[in-house]
Figure (cartoon, rainbow, N blue to C red):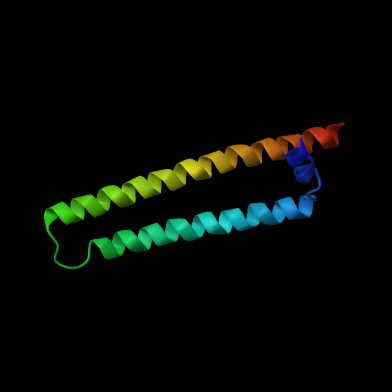
Amino acid sequence: SHIMSEYARMTDTERDQIDQDAQVFMRTCADAIHQLRTEAHKGVQSAQVKEHRTAVLDFIEDYLKRVCKLYSEQRAIRVKRVIDKKRL
């Protein structure tokens, strides 16, 4: 309950800033993965190394997508709560 009381003290401005920072961070990660994917295919490498790098980057990209989905679901809950409060 102590942790919940700490969250209750956050202002909407602070929450909005966290949302904005999270979106920037997720875009930065997606760009970094794209850059790594481009660099991973440059140069002379064995097929096994290319396949390994592709698999690792696919895994990282999938993980980021799952994190983004979770974030979107949590943000939707927050937006719904704000709308419900305005209705009351």
